[in-house]
Image 1 (cartoon, helix red, strand yellow):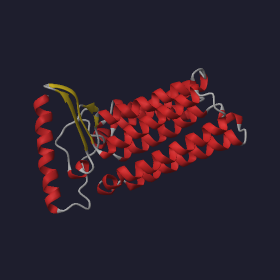
Image 2 (tube, rainbow, N blue to C red; image 1 turned 30 degrees about the vertical axis):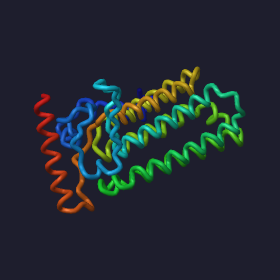
Image 3 (cartoon, rainbow, N blue to C red; image 1 turned 180 degrees about the vertical axis):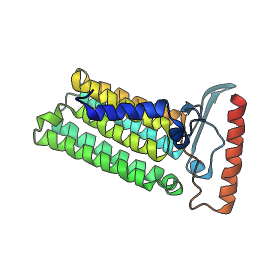
Length: 257
């Protein structure tokens, strides 16, 4: 471990999140589950642009779910990352053609993320998080395309770990920015997966796609912990609505305990 000081830092971060001291417990909302089934009593900023899906045949429910705009961002990126890395693993097309295709999908994902999340991040005063993710996507896209078109072998042979590392940084920043253990755990999981792929290169793109897309879809289908919502840029009526919704959620959470 002495030869890998950066790894020691991440291990310490993991232990702080997993077994938080009193100061960390005040930072993360340790009273809430890391992941749980979605609650339907949502705040105003979560109700904007929500998808409600209720498919049934007769009295038999096939699928009943709700997806906020943030959930939609996770689902969008989940589909796109699965497509990108499955193509990289199994497609017979030239690397240059694939790089153009990946760049196109990444731009679609970035624009979609910005459009879907904007009203939420403004209300939550988290615009800087979207800027961070856009910067990380831009860095990854530049390094990927440069390595392919200009033959930068060291990067080209480690595109899976590269994207897992960038995604880990994004999750860790978002996890601490929103005080979410679930997102911080996702960052650590991506980081460790990238370190494993540096040593085991077989099925690199398939493994990367499974880690990234699987995590995104899990987060999109679950309710993850975070700090209390911020009422920035909301009317007094909307703030009162959020306060009542919070009371209902806390009552339901205590009842389940």
